[in-house]
Length: 387
Image (cartoon, rainbow, N blue to C red):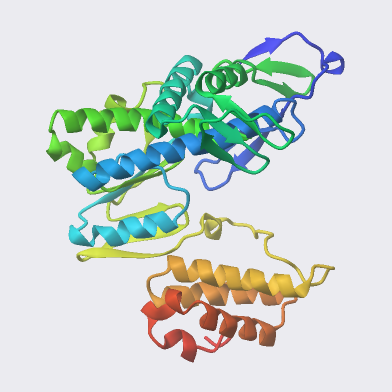
């Protein structure tokens, strides 16, 4: 970053404010820089770009699905949540898992070179437009669509390939943040806090992953491609199954040297990824819910407290939503039960009623049978509140 000499009181536009969020789960603890851009002047532009980049990412997902259908290799590692990790783990039953490892880009957002970012995003946009055989992206209040007709109205507008690229370049080049009485222009990296930042980071990494894998495919290096058959990436967090540490030694063959990729895993048989604790057991995987906050040496304030004016009905639905998450993330009933008991104890301390929690649990069992069928009859026989 470099300092801009404009005094804060004289600026004619609203800038995002930079502040620091502690990363308590890191040892030693670190800080994450967040740009609060709720009222930023560039927010409407960033929101528009977000809708377009979401469509661009979907276009590349369609293309990668076709490649996977023909070759069996997955070129799109991007995932949106841990549900896709569940599918990855269950699909691995055809091949015995030998090792599993996670990596993360320790300074992804603050290390992305602007010129490389603009170049890669431009290429991805071009490929998406040509692949979908469309001239415009139609943008409405809530969504974006591919279109061959230019639309200009009070409720919708259109943008072409060239204009979208210029808009992204402009946003990247005009990123300013306010720190106290100083205005800084970001010359390296993108601010974590602007709407389109996750899509820019995701697509930037995808462009390098796709290029590397496509090159291997053209060179028929199937032995290396097999090491990347089961991979997942949630923005800056990578999960690889049976990679045999190949990525560790060849990370700069894939990603630019400016990005620092590292792993804290000491045991390649068990990892923590997103909200899952994954363990290789025999010829398959065992997994349960993992929450990094369990290791904090202080209490966490979360979930409603019915001592106030919060509506009770919606609050008990929060309990059901957590049961759904636990059932999805726990393969064994004992882990599901442990999570439920911990949550019930916490909710009782926050003025929930045990008989209403039991009623909500029974409602969950009736509505979500497909999630608990793997447990057999145990969920129906268990009485919540009784260990």
